[in-house]
Length: 464
Figure 1 (tube, rainbow, N blue to C red):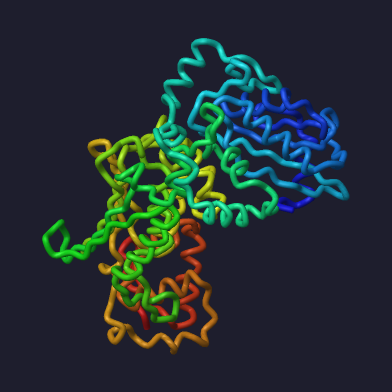
Figure 2: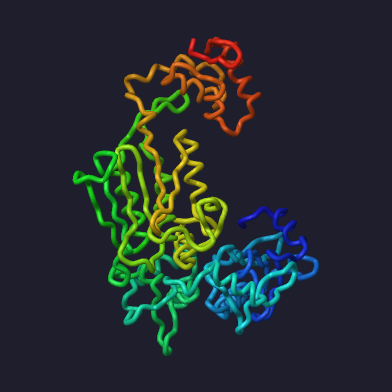
């Protein structure tokens, strides 16, 4: 069960809307495909099955596997086939229901039986010619990942990787590997023969670079602050999951450790938060433009910064102004499979997480740039705030004093800075009110930890 019982009950009794619909267990496949198409062409949404369509009361399921098969059948009847997250079986009281999620920002304009549909309130209606034209402009032409290269056959796939993927999804062994790949949009039937798409070859191929030579990561560590002839370089090849694992290992091997004060503890941490770097690499692999041949993803580690360059720029309606809020996936199949494997959050790009991790580590926020058809993200090194461990003062004297985490941060800041102004404390704790921070500092003065110096706007604090 993925949501609390009460939360689900509340959702089910809400009125049907553009982003929420409910069906009984034996809904006709045609009706289900119609609603899924409408949601895919608008804001996405959720469909609950096994629920009374008027009251929202769970009716329970008699044939779960049969219902799942009809869901996949409905998704395949949509053109191009809908690649959706795996349906989830939820428990409400004593009844099981199934939840199907249609993510926002899917890459195509979808139609069912030749009709391009959208959601308007509680209804699924045909798109007007004007809106259909706008949707196609927003979402672009046929996606590279969904195309089938000439001469590619099932022999080009490593079915041991596909079997491992099936195991990750907790699907039974009798669920055919070809059927799974077809449902994920990785196989197309051409002249009665199943053939792999570019997405399948990149995710499960025996030799992915045979089909997409530029689908690699070029990683390099330079000794200075610019590209030079002194570097450690590695061309990272293989399937996309293999590339992500190897790129992360390269980063672990090449980044330096710096001494920092975390609360009362002296500790060594990588100069770049590994979680932030991992999110950038996943974002680049999942959302780069694979149709743009001749360039790879670049991972550059300099003396003062780390950069990730992704070919193709920002996709669809995403731009520098809205990239932390916009939701659009250039490679929906690749993004979904990587999400199934746990690499990427399907509904977003992970860039919000990068910003949050940098803030948590008191480092500058990442810089986002779009230059010459390439999307570049830059992380500042933590070495500017680093210190020799031997120079960090002994903080054990404060261990017995009752302090909150914010006050520990303040003392940690003063261990490497001569003074702490109220403005600097606010930067350390940006989500805390000025009055709460003022009380923190006054408490530290009362406990004879800090001395208050200066007056009015010139007030600052030092360690006693």
